[in-house]
Structures are given as C-alpha cells and as structure tokens.
Amino acid sequence: MKFSTFTIIIATAYHPSSVVGSSQCVVPLPLNADDFNQPDWATIIEGVFPTWAVPEGGCPRLDKVGGSLVANYTDFPVAEEGKFNPCYYTKAFAGLDPKYGGYPTPIDTHYHYEFAAPFFGQPGDGSTHHCPMNADPSTKIQSCPKIAPKCDGEGGACNKITDDYGIGHVPPFVPLAAVKNAYFGCGEDVCKWFSDKVNPCNIPKDVVDRLVVEYFGTEAGNIQFTGPVLGNDLPVVDNPKSTYYKLEYGGDAEACADNNCRGPHYCSKEAATEDIWGDFCPYIHTGENAGLYRHPHLALAALELWIANKCIGPAICPMTWLDSPNGKKNDYGDKMKSTSITWAEMDDNNDPIAQPAVPYKWPNAGDGI
Image 1 (tube, rainbow, N blue to C red):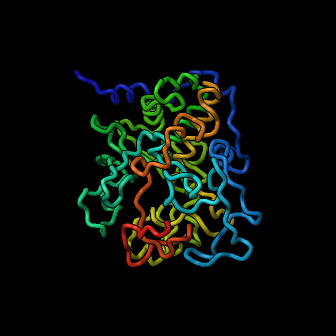
Image 2: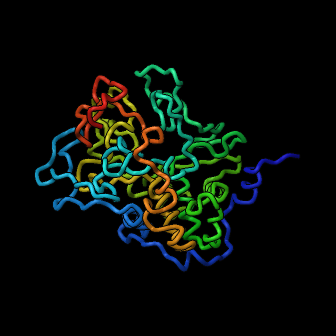
C-alpha cells in the first residue's frame, strides 16, 4: 500500500505532542499583557522590520471610512533609509523599496502556502487568485480561483490535502498559530527546525507542514481553521485551534456597519457595492488603531527570524529582515524581479488611504500608487 508524505504526517501528528524539550522555554518571546499574554506582535515585528519615526500626534486617521483626515492626525511619517512605514494603510507598495511605504510580500518572505499567481500582466498577478492570462481587465479578481482544494462535507474554512498541492493556500495566520503553539508548547527543540542550507533563517516547509497538520488537521485528513478574530462561535485565545491575531484589526463594528469590510480591508460603501476586490481597499484607518495593521505573513517572518537569530546566531541570521539572507536577495531596482501586485485606479492616486475608484478601473494609471 502506498502512503503519501501527508498521510504519514497526519498519522503521526494529529494529536499535539507532550514530549518536553528545551530551547523555546529558554528563549522567551516578549508578551503583551493587554492581549491575553499573546506574543507582543507589534514589538516582534518592529524588531525585525524597524520603522520610520511616528508623527508626534500619531498615525493619520480619517473621521470615517472614505472620509476626511481628523484634526491633529494629519501628518504622515517621513521615509528613512533601511526602515519601514509605521503607519500602514495599503499593500499597493508591497514588494517595492520600503521608502515607498510598503513591506515585503509573502513571496519575498518565502511564505510556503501563498501559491501566488504568475506575473503575466493579468488581473491579480502576484496575488493568490489565478485569473486567466487573457482575462479581461474588468475581471473581478476575487472570482478567480485559489490553489486551495476545498473539503467535502466539512463546514467552515477547510482545505483538502492533495498530492499535487499538499496543504494548498491557507492564510498566514494558520501557520503563524501553529508555529506559535509549538514554540510555547515546549514539546521539541525549536532550534532543530532550522536545517535548510539554502534558506538558513526560514523554517523548512516539511516542518511547518507537520505543525499545521498537528494543530489544524482533521481525522478526515483535511486542514480546518477559523478566522484570526475572537467571537462567541470561535475558539478562545488559549485554544490551540485559535488563529487569533491582534494586528488583524478587522471588523470594527462602526466602520463596517454598511457590510463594506472585506476581512481587514475597509472599503467605502461605493466600492463594496461595486464588488471591487477587497484587497484594493485600505486597512484600518479610523480610530486609535489607524495605520497599525500588520499582515500575518510579516508576523510569521518576524517570528522565524527572531527564533533563528537566537538559535543560529546573528552572524547568519541578523535580527533585522533587510540584513537577513531573505532581505538581501531583494533587488528593488529591478522591475522584472518585483513581487508587487498590479494596482487598480484609486479615487486619489497620491493618497495612501485612498479608496478604489468607482466605476472600477484596472490597471492603475501609474501616476501615483
């Protein structure tokens, strides 16, 4: 009888291990007492992706989704060489030189489960949606499929593990939760995770596969998970099935009152009615959390590098991402190597908190974002 690698993983890792190890208990992560003693993701991410100075009054914010800047919160941060934007509203600049205000893409950070679409000039290039190469520019990007084979008969977000794609595309908050659980579980020596000679500061895919299956695998051989928020029908924070991640900042009740939010993206009512792909809409930009969203693939990359720095040492794995092997491979001056998604036209191409233009137009005119 032939068994796939994933069949063996499921058989051996469905129930979390209770064997006690050492390293992750010796090198603690900073915790946030105000966030259920979860890892202090803001501190961890900023340690790996240090930021420009925050404006004296704090990050700019709008009075409502698609509204106007609030008095005393109008100053945007100034770019600093080798650092990242502390007031983050859009992934329009992801994959470009940090001076433009973006962060590395999941492709840049070697996220194992991105399954990004190729860059052939089609709608959704570089995203998880695989539109045909000859797709009409008006194609709704979210209508194009992801490489995420769905389960048969299991509710919620569920992937069928296949020989072709393994786990398939899952959002980064899933492996982030799995790696975090294993790190705090003290069940194995996490320093042994780093065995990849080519990418020495990354946790190899076979290790992450095993951890994802351990915490999110089902008896049917699938991967099932919930969103990274808290709710009455979702796992509580200390449940290993929880994918809660504070910096998601999704679903603000007031800002999303018009059914206008798409995950962590806050779309205008007009953009939502037009059914424009949510990723073109800005992240949280109202209230005290404006500009503080950080994508979970950055948290995972930061966690990986944080652990690698302690286990392997700063000579090979410096604490800052731009100095790490991954960061040094980025050639921001070569457009042919860019991992940035082709953007849509915005209602103001010079405003990082802009909303998608209505009617929808793709691609962007190129005179700003």
